[in-house]
Length: 253
Image (cartoon, rainbow, N blue to C red):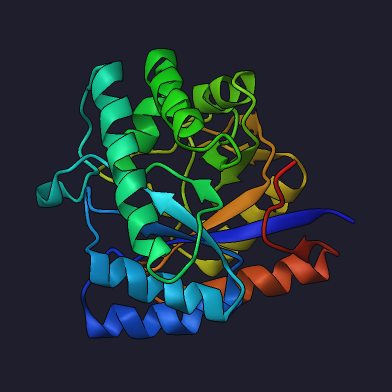
């Protein structure tokens, strides 16, 4: 039976409405990627989110990003491989130390925003991030954009890599996501999302300019700050279950 993980980026907002949404989402997902002090995240938020994840048997991952709260770490930028390695190592250490207070541990790492995009496209940056993960703990899994440079570089270093896809985001013909700053970056209706999810399960997506792009997905991302996020995840779960796909947290090889 085909299996897939549902992951969500969490612990990014100290906001009661979004915290309530995280509480509602946690039983519906299988992996949580916790912001660890770069683009967002404080020790209190990290600990609170990890506690919620543990209660629901959800895998706990680190979600490192560029340390710029002004644009939430999403604005496109360049960084040297040394800078990438340093910020990833520093943020992994921060989250691991918080988790250790409750005797919890990490299972995976997923970069955020501009760091995600940079390491998807730039092999040197991908090398730096993968090396930082290996140096911290080679047992950690790595979540990376399906078909990207980070998938290849992570696997070349012996990491278990989960290829990630997005049911609600538009793709370009090179397999990268349409930037949020551009029109059409987020799919507009549930019907569009369901159609793209069905494509993903069949090994491809249709790009914004009409090309069929091959794609393999081990995990699907759901954003907690997406409007109607809880309803969106319930829709995904129903579609996956009707397609005979088992939803489960990832297992390291």
